[in-house]
Image 1 (cartoon, one colour):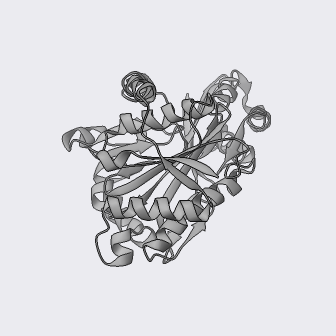
Image 2 (image 1 turned 45 degrees about the horizontal axis):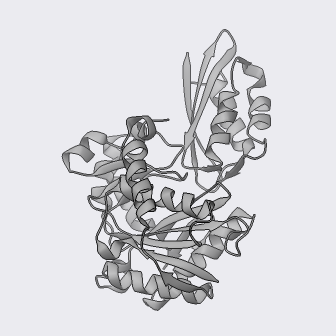
Image 3 (image 1 turned 180 degrees about the horizontal axis):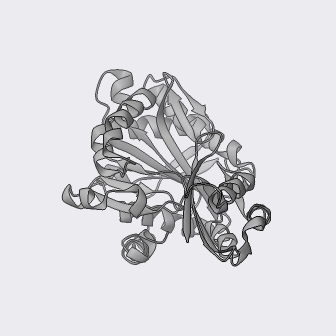
Length: 95
Length: 255
C-alpha cells in the first residue's frame, strides 16, 4: 500500500512524502518538496537507504539517514522529515 | 574582490533548458579553476516553469497547459519551489566554497549574496530587505526568490527579481489542489508577492534592471566586475547539458 502525506514545516516549506508499506515494513520512501538539500545526491542516497524498515522504526531511521554528513538540509530538518514519514507510515491515520 | 560579469540577457532571452545548462556549465568552469567567480544575468524566452530539484514536475506543473501556451517546464539543479519565469530578471552566481560571499553557514551566504541584489533594488528606488530563509521583500511583500546548491567545491545560487507579476497566468500553469481554490490562491499571491512595476508604478526594462543589479552588487560586495562572455568551450558544454540533461524526460521527471 502506498501512503502519502503533505507536511508543512515551520517556516513554510512543504514536504510531500510517500511510503510504500507491506506487511508492517516500509519498502521504500520518497521525500519531495520545496526544501533544499545538498549535495542533492546525498539526499537521494539517504532516501535509497530506506528499504524494509519496520513501521515503528521509521522516524528513528529517517533521523539517522537524513543527518549523515555530507548531507546538509536547509528549509527543513531531519526531524521534520522524520515526522512527515512517521505520519505517512502511521496506519492509524487516514492515508 | 573580482568577479566575472556575464550579461547573457543583453543579447536576448534564452529557453529554460539552456539557461539552466549555462548555470551548470559555469559551475563546472569555476570548479575546475577555468573561470573566476562569476555573476550572470539572464532572461527567458519562451516563458518557463521551473521546479526545485526535489519536486515532482508532474505533481506541481500542468504540463498540458504549458504545452498549449508554449511555456517550457524544466527541473532545476537547485532545490526550492516551482517558479514561473516570464517578466523578470534572473541572476546566477558561482563561487568557490570559502569565498567571502560563500561562507560555510548557508543562511549567511544567502544573506551576503542577497545584499548585492538589495543594493541594486536600492538604486532603482526600492527599499528592500532580506527575508530569511531565501527571499527578498519590499513593502512587506516578496519581490525575489533565491535558490542555492553546493557541489563540486562551489556554491551556485540563482534567483529572480520580478519585473511584473501575473498570478492568474502563473496558476493557469501550476497544478492546484482543487480548481475552486484557484481564485483564493491568486488572491494570496497578490497579497504576498510584488514586482518592480507594482513597487515603482512604472515598467522597468531588463536593461535598466541589469544595470542597477550589476552596480548594486559591485558596490555592496566591493567587487570589480569584469565583463566576459561565455567561452566557446562553456557554450559547447551548455548546449550539451541543455540537450542531454535539461531537455530530457529522465532529468525532468526524475522524481
